[in-house]
Length: 214
Ligand code: DC
Image (cartoon, rainbow, N blue to C red; front, side, top):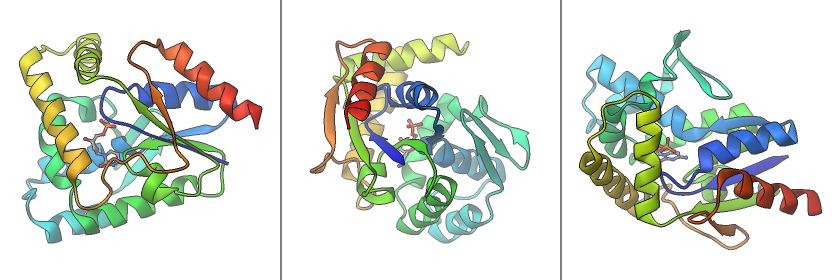
């Protein structure tokens, strides 16, 4: 069974998906992390982020392993590196290419299809697993999402420039909602949950109750 969760940056979906998966005894797939690994590889290899052909070839040969909240590139654990602001800054351009997304969709489906998974991202309810048994869209107002992102970076020991974090998040929101393929959209059959005034355990409880009810 697949539980699909979409939502913008800072909506809490990664934490919620991870903990909900634990509660359900499901595996968890953070698809944003797959795009983050690709972006990391692009920066490491010096591939031009505008070069669709180069990006497609890199995506095809990406030696990526993902195990719940850990990600590995060629067996090196890069779980921390992919959360750095330099990845946030460069990711939007890279994830906008149709062919790149098709390859990443394939990787994501291969990982989770036919198994018990909570999968989260931007296009999981619309493109990757539109027939998922449960589909949720988590949201929160932009101010609180920026604040959450700042707190997350501080917790990870980053030196944080609040204005830069805000600018990146606003830019990513715009890119996520307006890209031609795989954009972030709320579609019919997906439950909208506003987490602005909810704590993480409350969101998990809400989702868990909906799933258990069926
Ligand atoms: O969820 P996140 O912030 O780690 O995602 C990082 C970026 O990856 C985000 O700005 C948009 C992109 N992304 C995407 O295009 N499609 C997905 N399914 C997941 C993430």
